[in-house]
Image (cartoon, rainbow, N blue to C red):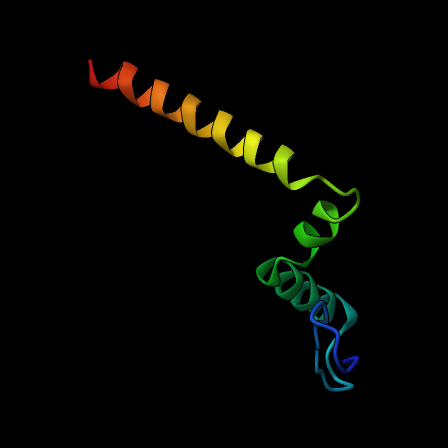
Length: 72
């Protein structure tokens, strides 16, 4: 079932002959490829934009440090 206007929806169409295990496997694959669970987990709590930028900057500095270590 697709809810109009909902970007976090996945539609699994199957016939009556398909078993539930196959439909569930298809559903899980579609949810994973759409990134729905990651979006829901990230939206559990609000993170201020400044905190996001600080974390990204710290990660970039660390990655640069690691690259510099390997290039020596």
